[in-house]
Length: 62
Image 1 (cartoon, rainbow, N blue to C red):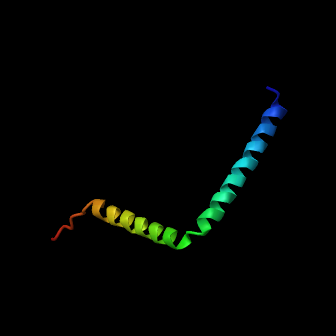
Image 2: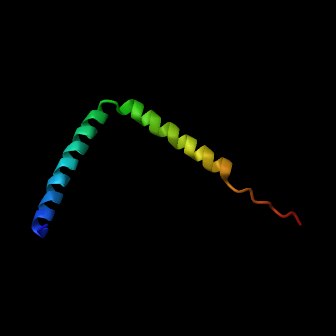
């Protein structure tokens, strides 16, 4: 395959992917409130799991 053709195909695919991303972003904008709650909830779950899995360090008492 000629290098210029290969580059042109990459540019076409990049334009298609950007268009899909823009469409997804516009569709997601309509459901922002639920999306924010969901992200916050999963963030809290992640923090809780990290705290639960944190190694316990023993403090030496002299």
